[in-house]
Image (cartoon, rainbow, N blue to C red):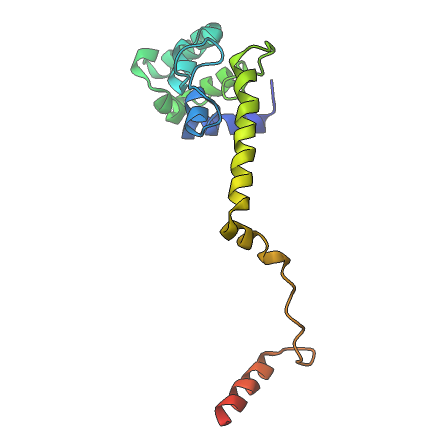
Length: 176
């Protein structure tokens, strides 16, 4: 099932739209396509997962029966964002999430010839290459090594607050 903290995290990620859906992961360039990994539908959105994904048909029926009972509106009258924002659905939605994998990590496909296994290594190689190129650029190399320059020599001020020493230095330079 999962912890209450994990369930709350998934709920708020879905509510804000920054969740593990094909659409969001494709937008962040973490997946090659926005396709649903549960049913292979062309676009995996929150609406798709809450309303029509065949993987969660049984849980969807329970969810929408509860929503109908609480609000008097059937699923055709709802958008996922409105469902997640409505307080009357505050029990039905977490129940749905606790019985499904909606919003959880993307399942790893075991088929060696699958789309996932083909693009993940390529994606990693491209990201590593981008990092190498970015850090091999002269300007970024200068920025990267700033912290490794030697520290300035210690100040000749006595221990304690050096504010007065600085003030005295400024006064002495003004006198000259």
